[in-house]
Image 1: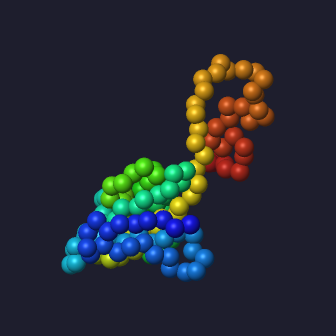
Image 2: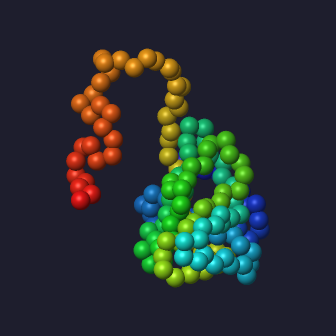
Image 3: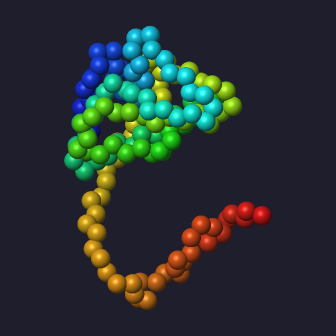
Length: 152
């Protein structure tokens, strides 16, 4: 599938796939030719990419963390996955947070996240009354109700 991207800033990098079968396209920081942004431990920031994406109807863009950045520095995408709707035409920004113990400097052109384009199913909510006929084996059991986690 072809997806159109526009540079909103001349120094912006277009997203790129870093291996032939990579699921995502890497997104790069657009901070001006010599720009940088330092994230202190616990700090979050909206990092611009300088690009716009023109997603086809029925698809979304999922902004996800880069595993190497998370492993090496503790930097991740705060609202992961961030969603880009098909009708959004503004600049793509990435909300990063530094969960590591040391400050991390993001420089212009650094790969900061990845973009996965995925189909979505449209849903039209319909209000109904609760019914015993709709009960399942799980019912209203929430966090930890299916086992596998013992907080003690």
